[in-house]
Image 1 (tube, rainbow, N blue to C red):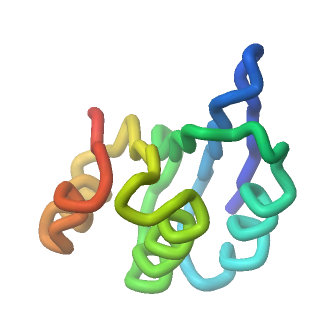
Image 2 (image 1 turned 90 degrees about the horizontal axis):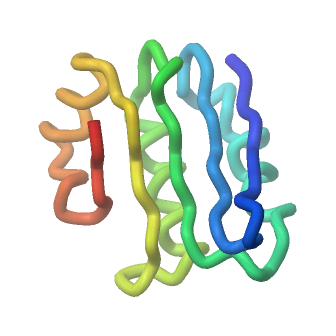
Length: 102
């Protein structure tokens, strides 16, 4: 598992790339990826193109990010999910809370 970040040129978007398994062992690295970011961030993009698995603790981490980013007013997008990851997000009704783009 590896978590890397990338900030947009204009400084408003933070993209978090998750590689491998996204589970409880990722908790600290995931939290540090956005808590240590610049205060000018208004949009968070979670790139799951290389995510192979996520569990219920990963769903909880996504909810914590949403709260950190402003709750209902937040702009958090989940992108590039494979079929298995997308299915877990759908079963969990995360389309109600996040914009999910394939």
